[in-house]
Length: 269
Image 1 (tube, rainbow, N blue to C red):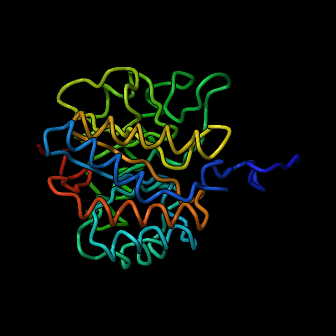
Image 2 (tube, helix red, strand yellow):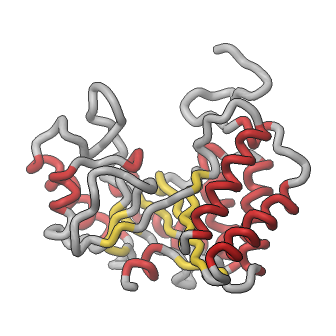
């Protein structure tokens, strides 16, 4: 595999150029983005964080969960049902027993079934009966392992699912879905759609400066509209990415008028 200044060592979970050589003025620029977003919002906005692919206990995931737990900042971790075991759940739930985490369902086994185009575990390439069976099995497995702690929220792998699966979620007991902003197809009522607007770690800009400028604009614009959903990827985080997230949590916690919430709290509003 070719390597270069802005490439990570692994192709499966590459680290964005931004976190390989981050600019040195992160604090003032992030604070400016938060302040300008809040000003444009009229002084009140909501910030929520989501992280996917949760089940296998590793150093990056434990560190990420621990950061939120220690700061008492709400987080919505998406649990992959087929990957979760009672032993893994014991470790994960023990990190944040306070109830600040909105544990919820992230697919079934995070497997792509599409041959072309956008990756999707619940796309149009499979019969609806098969997809419903996996959704039901996943919900039952999480219910049993987490002792009813997991919430009726569904986040599809790769932020992608087709219309028939989306329309079936309510009948399966789900109350909300979280995908990327402006995701298609549109979310049917009464299912609550809670999008994420800024992906901190799955970024494709060619250099750190371009990446930071784009990320801060995503945060500012989302706050200005009233709600910013921030997407995290623990597999793609290096020390620089963790340092920025810690800074983000610090400044957000101090920002007047900015409410920190999680998907479970937003689901019932």
